Length: 114
Image 1: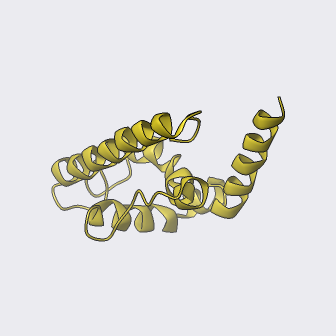
Image 2: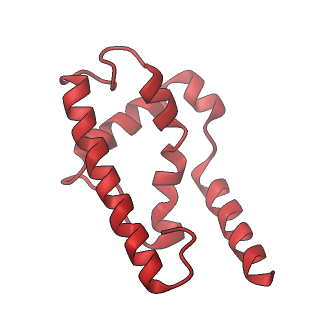
């Protein structure tokens, strides 16, 4: 989706990414059992690992024109992202989405020059 060279490659990457997001939504539903995080009431390993991807997921619309997270398709993930982003440690370490998007666009431009 991000690095496909042809429209077909990008389309296939998009399909795979959307399928993965649906899987994450199901995993959150199953693992959390209605609690705030994948592991339950407290942040666990899966939350931390996935938390590192939050800014990328949020920046996908600007980078690829694809909305990964949607209120009707991924309501649990959207709520999880909001909760995770409100944690003080997350506020300190997570990159700002607009800065990440600018960085990714710069890297894309560099690749096209090579």
